Structures are given as structure tokens and as C-alpha cells.
Image 1: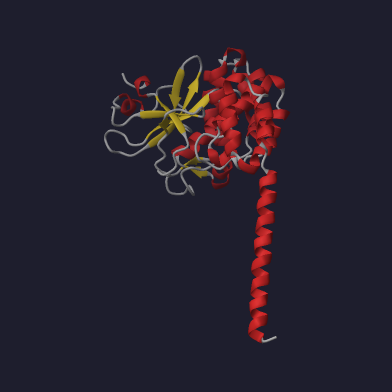
Image 2 (image 1 turned 30 degrees about the vertical axis):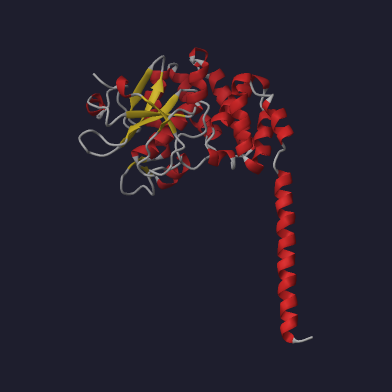
Length: 311
């Protein structure tokens, strides 16, 4: 056999082997995805109000659907609504990546904080689900922060006795104890996760707000990110924190002032229809939270809260 023929045969063998491997790999990948019967069985574990959205989420989750199904199964019966809420509203990138144990532990610690916090019994279920339970706010890296932050900050919450006192105390203690401060130049990126900000010791207003929201949620305080993409005077964007104590109030992260008495309160009161103020909602809405640092990402839902800031 000539050398040319041998080369041709070798190439054909390689191509056939690759095709056979690809077909086998494709079959294995398909087998690893939960079947529709498995998905439908899992969906029945969710409260009826979430079943349609949980079904859609599981169908979009690919192979990671098995992790989400296991999370639903492992969730305590009393906490299954929280798990269903998260799965129904998770961004697509989280649906295909977050592991079941991560979600289960997040759920357990969230309900634990609710049960321990002196004000826990006063928090409406919808406020808890959307503003205590979520594991993230924006597009930040998904850190495992809840257990650590609970241990660090729960005594302050128990000592403070009220949401307002807890917010004021933690808005100073979090940043002092973790040694994180504001810097527009020395922070590595604007959308830092909690542990990225802790490692860098500097954060933007967005990074500081993410850190404070997570610290507050860890001890059962309903909190969310709020912000404006551009002030009406053209002076740039800004991000801050809103907390709920029967109604929503605002505060600047690492700016220990009284609620609703921030340096930007006057600017916010002059907001107009072309420059709305949005608050983040984990529950899906028709509005998108504007992220100036990542303008092409449109998976963070929002609600328009502009009217709450006008005089």
C-alpha cells in the first residue's frame, strides 16, 4: 500500500473516530438532562402559583436541571415556596450553573435569619421572598456569603432590636470590620461581589451597595439595590441601598447618615421622567435595571421607584 493511501486511511479513521465520539458524547449529554417526566414530577413539588414558571425555568436549565430538581426535593416543606420563587425568577446564567446545595443552604439560612430577627414576624412574605431570600443583586459573581455574614453580623441585629437601628449600626460596622472603603480609582471593577470587595479593600458605590445589601439580608433585613443611570444634571450615575421597615427608605452604603438624609437626597427629589430611579427586583418584571458598567446585560429586573423620591 502506498504512503498516500495509508495517509488517506489514517485520516478517515480519525474522522470516523471523532464522529463516533461526538455522537456518543451528544447522547451522554442528552441522557444527563432531566427528562420531561422528571421535570413535571419536580414541578408538582412547587406551590401551584409558581408551577408554570418553574416548569419554564427547568426546561431552560439544561443539564443543571438535575441540580435544581434536587434543590426542590431537598427543601424543607415549609421552605419550598422560597425555593420555587428562586428557580422561577433566576437569570438564565444562574439556571445553568448554580448548584443545588448552594441554593438549599441559601434557603435554610434565609429562613433561619427570619426566625431569629426580632422583626421577622412583621415582614410580609412577598417582601421576604424578593428582598431577603435572593443570593445576589446584580451581575456580580455569585459568592457563598450568607453563613459567614450571619455569624459576623447577627449579634448586632439582636442587640439593635429594630431594623432602623440595625441598618445604622451595620452601615458602619460592616465597612469598618471588613476594611472596605470607597474608591473610584483603586477598586478593580465596579460590579464587585462581596468577597471581591473584601479582598480589594476598595469598592465603587455599586460594590459597596452590594456588600451592604448582602450583610443586611444575612440578618433578615429586607434590602435592595437602587440607582439612577444618569442624574438630570448630567453628573453621572449612582447606586445606593433601600431598606424596608414597614415602608421603603434609602441610605448610602458606607455613609452612616440617618435614613433618607443622604447627600444625594436633593438630587433624587429633582428626578424627571427621562432619568428614572429604579430599584432591583429579583422577581421578574417588565423593566430592566440599567447597569452602566455592563449596558448589554439585561437580565436584572427592576421597578420604577422615582415617585418615592420626589418632594
